[in-house]
Length: 303
Image 1 (cartoon, rainbow, N blue to C red):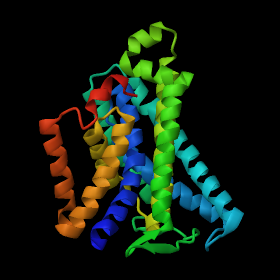
Image 2: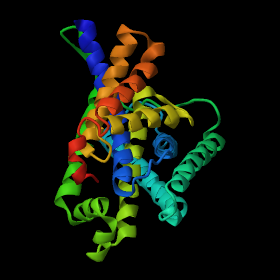
Image 3: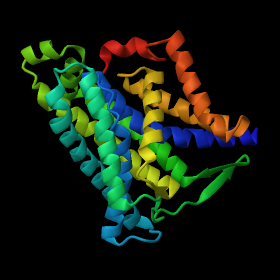
Image 4: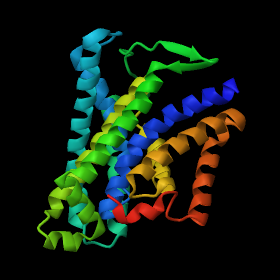
């Protein structure tokens, strides 16, 4: 049983990263029905931005106390801001001109933007994995034979906090209502005086910022990053969004944690080499028997 609960902890921490990325996927799809394949690469950009900020600040070793808290908040906020700006630029120059084009055009454009970002990151940081300085102390404690690391708590806690803040924004603020109205009927929302361009831009800003936070967490969690990380992570996060019911915020979170758990238990009880097969087989089964996803009935409230 100790092994089971250990993998439960590992799966939840891994799922927290997928959940943060999946929130951005589901927001963009919910509002303009576009599968933004570049989203996974923005997540990788978040880890590179975090690394650059660490370098600029000269942080190379563990920190403690208030400086540590200030560094975590500052670096993550910086990565979120830079990724948000990249997301807005992509929306403005790559997707907005194709908003009324056949749906295949923006889909192909998204794939092209993904390759562009990957090549830019390869030129920027090189083709090999890049180490991220370990500036957060990572003590672990044991409960009933299960080892829990502080960084695992950080990942899960951050994902839950982001989910709560995002839900508050979407369901309790005027801009959130504008996003929901745009997602349900873009033309009607425009007739009611909602600025569609601003609302969609805001969606990309928030979704990309969430990917930036996931990139920061990923760099801290794994201690390394690579320009090609976003490909696999993006696919699994997209799978999580579809699994939970794409367009649904709670579904994206649920799907992210489920994918993390399936991956952790699959690696432990089947084989590490078969985890991708298990994850995507699960997706196929869900799409066959429940095409709208696990929480698909909430799609009228999609964002």
